[in-house]
Image (cartoon, rainbow, N blue to C red; front, side):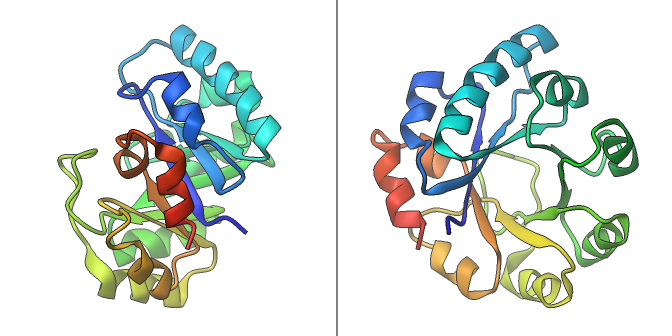
Length: 193
């Protein structure tokens, strides 16, 4: 079973991103921060077709309207985004993921009944400049009490991914480590563990 959670954004073209979308990817999150809903929906529909064909779960980042319109497999939200409660009400029976940067946030997420938490940053990351590194010990603490799946995120690449798996994370989230490569499909093969 694949353990890769790929995050795509505006930096990488649809064509390039699709090279990385294979059976070795479990989830694909479309994270478009600098486009309007119409453009987001257009891109999401293109990715939905590819994800459906490859058996990859499509997750929309922080846009409930687009997630519903495209009938995505789920939505991912941050601590300051639309609430998990609202996502459950507006988007029932779908996957809901929540970003957590501490043990307390993770505990709160478990009480909310999310399907997975995104825990990080594991390492320094160029994708999210303001991310706080929480490190391996905190990841292990969270994994030990987790009541849902744990996706580790932030600065993970082919040089450090194995320790994340060893710490018990269910999935590793990657973006530039894969999509920043000339041949992203080859990096995906390395990261699947």
